[in-house]
Length: 266
Image (cartoon, rainbow, N blue to C red; front, side, top):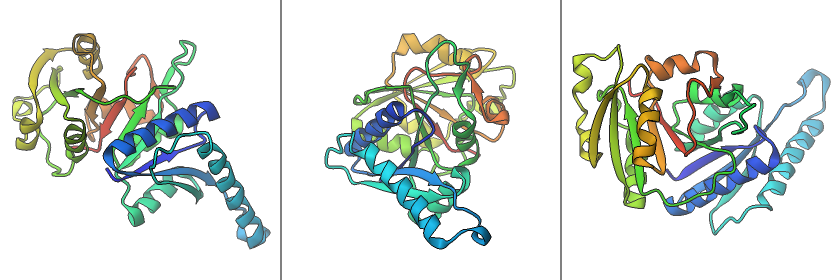
């Protein structure tokens, strides 16, 4: 995960800066580069001068640099990246040219009055992008990852590259991974067949029967006390349903530790 992208402007400045610092600390361990992104919307060409749009780009770049001045870069290359247009369109377009390995997003506030775990834009990015996403709780400070809990419903993974991010994390931090298979009402016999690469990664395995994957995760989080929770975003199933409306309610799913969402397994 050499190229890590952090969208700014999705939350208040202090939270964005804390998330950016986490991404930098994470990138330092992985030997990666961070792109700090903020979008700006150009005025319609028919009613504006090119110089006006250049000014908007410069203003966006300045805003990013002001935030970068408040973090410790720790020797990591951090690039201010103003992108034109809509974030959901700009990131995939940038990815085609620069091969982004990971997007770092922030969860909504942990204030009990805030009902959402992910807001509209963050939820849309998780739902629509094929890039792995790391979701950081509000003001969460980086610490080395020694224990990972990976929660799945099915061990079938057809895309060869799906597990690459978790492999790199395991290698970098010399971490252990516990696999939790949650068997819901939709569980099929073929779900018990584990892809060879997945089987080779896990340190231990446990299964449970629950109504949803989230219920299974809640049941085992305190028991395992992991530093990272990992899930697979498939095109169908519980997580597919979660993001039907883009926003994710806390009552449906939330995590108080970093959550790694790997792109669809099939």
